[in-house]
Image 1 (cartoon, rainbow, N blue to C red):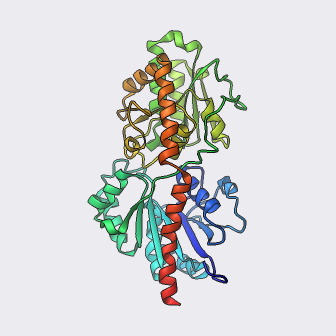
Image 2: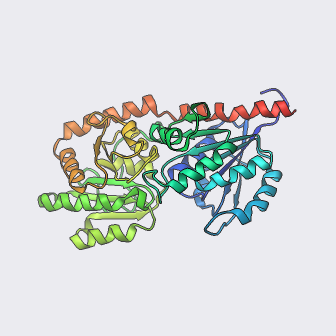
Image 3: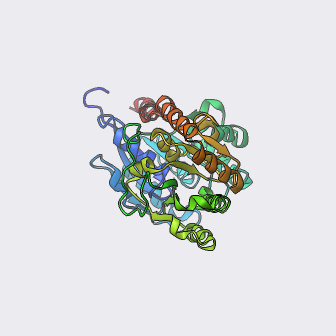
Amino acid sequence: MSAGARRLRVLHVVYRFDIGGLENVIVQLINRLPAERFEHVVLSLTTVSDFRQRVEREGVRFIALDKPPGHALKQYPAIWRLLREIRPDVLHSCNLAPLEVVPVAWAAGVPWRVHVEHGWDAHDPQGLSAKYRWLRRAYAPFVSRFVSVSADLDRYLGEAVGVPAAKRHLIGNGVDTRRFSPGPAPAIEGCPFEPGRHWLVGTVGRLMTVKNQPLLARAFVRWLRERPELAARARLVIVGEGGLRAEVERVLDEAGLRALAWLPGARSDVAAILRALDVFVLPSQAEGTSCTLQEAMASARPVLATAVGGTPDVFEDGVSGLLVPSDDEAAMARALNRLHDDAPFAQGLARAARERAELHYSIDRMVDAYAALFARAEAPRLQVA
């Protein structure tokens, strides 16, 4: 970057800025992209939560539009004026809802428009909605480049939406393997269970339909029903907040096992919680590339996940983790039993998971890939100059 040249201004657009893997990627990009080359603005179509406090860079502007449910057509004039005020070099939109901002950005003269698909929509977990495919096709001409976080999503954009290969990039999510790393299981503030004394089965994520935490609760109940002697030691940890909390609690209450579970809501000490778990479970109905799954792998935890979306590409089944069919509580209960009873096998999975995370999911590699993609905005800017 030549002396006196201004930094590239990146406008990150999300539906809401709250705790989640997508938002965590944005935080990591803001914190890690070279400050001398990039500056950032975050635009939420709805709300901005305290998650913004994880941004370490100074001078990052957050904007919340408080958009009501439905299409943002009535907000287009205000969004256009906002874009003309901000004058971003790069629009970085994430998932389907913010995609409707891309044509407005094109009309406002934003030269480089990058749209990222982080995972399946909550109302379309298998990517089968004809309406959502049509919307992506309609907006595609206004997108400079599409990014997918998994091969599964990349195939969807190519085959179902018709985005040509030259316009697609595959950039997997990355994990901070220094922060998320092996270590002694710590005592967790507020947790009624004791790592080492108890065998902790856990997951971390928003309690929403696509994440399917009730499946884990049902599998845990089924496992203890089949192995009642393990109730003295086995415990369930479900970290996160959302609409499925009541269903998870109902499953546990009906089985009389509520006292064996800890549901603390959203937490900021995820790295410590992951190190305390004996097995991390991802029970999702659909996934792109789960950041928390990668974090658990980097923490050298045995991982158990449903074989959906991009998850089968994240680790090798039986080598660096275990896969079970989606919504199959019996299979998940059997896998929990195997991991509990065969400690050497579980430890081998954990070691291989850590090695895979270090080799394939470096956060530096992710940041470098986005830096190179965002920097392509310099070409149209220089042409205009």
